[in-house]
Image (cartoon, rainbow, N blue to C red; front, side, top):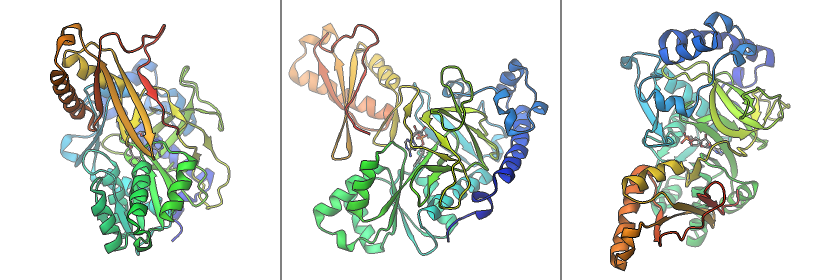
Length: 431
Ligand code: DLL
């Protein structure tokens, strides 16, 4: 099988445009009628549903940002009664308020189909054993690839993350052929497999890795060590989850599932739409979703779009790797972290907000340290007292972020002050 839904994946540009335009007009009517928050934004901009007849009219619509999601938290952007909605997924927000997204059964079916397209593009089919080591739960990685694999009819192994020895044991015993996890976990698994000397018992052929940035060098390492082809996959909770775009055999960027998510690239400063091939901020409009159809959602991810012909036969537009962010979000071990979340915890725990986040990548795995200045009153604490405070702070940070950081409490005024903006993040990872 080369495609999962060939009619859409390989449609002519004109057909795709027509489908997008028709779906867009319908989505705008749906949102305008059912989401007072967005109706207000449209009214303020002086645009009515009747003004949106084709994708060319997209720039007339107002943008949505993570800030709008925070203001409308939790149900303010829901476009259907709660009784129609069957699932919630979530990811970090900039402060204590998390981002929540909602799905009807049809929304989940569409999302699963997008992930099935990604698995087929990576060479998957009904005979494969799809080993899903993304986290399950609020994070979309596990549920998304799990759903895609089910829909395709592959044998699905819902491993979730962690317990590396058991992952490898099952990989051997059950003959996993496609591995789905973050690229850093794939690299770690590869290393452990080599260290255990069991590589000859592993029959993986492909990997579908995303949720964080990774380099071409990292791809080559993983491919060599696991003897597989490694494919990138992109997505975000607000738009559905993994499978918004996926890589094909050409491995030169990710095809966006444009029949569901219409992409634009804008200048992050002016909001102006940029021509194809120019680097800028990626914006998505959901044209088929029922429960949580965000229109012109600013992802803060920076990339380039290309409609150059692809050797795989798909006509869906391709996005490059993510080249950076327009905000200060960090992705640490696949988890989104905002410095403002760390600040919130420090203030809640009575620390001055003088801190530094130090990131590194040791053998493809992220290290994450938070150095925090103690207050003057803490200065007289005993060494044991400080160690206890570090443990306490580690637990509070873990509760806020969902991942562990090494916490080091340092003397007052020992973190270098900068002349201008505070340097909160020292990121030594090379991506
Ligand atoms: O990370 C969804 C996902 C799960 C994608 C599994 C791929 C695989 P969020 O937690 O909402 O959702 O984080 C979304 O992660 O805006 C990007 O900044 C980043 N991101 C996702 N995929 C990639 C990728 C999931 N392939 C945020 N390369 C996005 C670089 C990625 N960054």
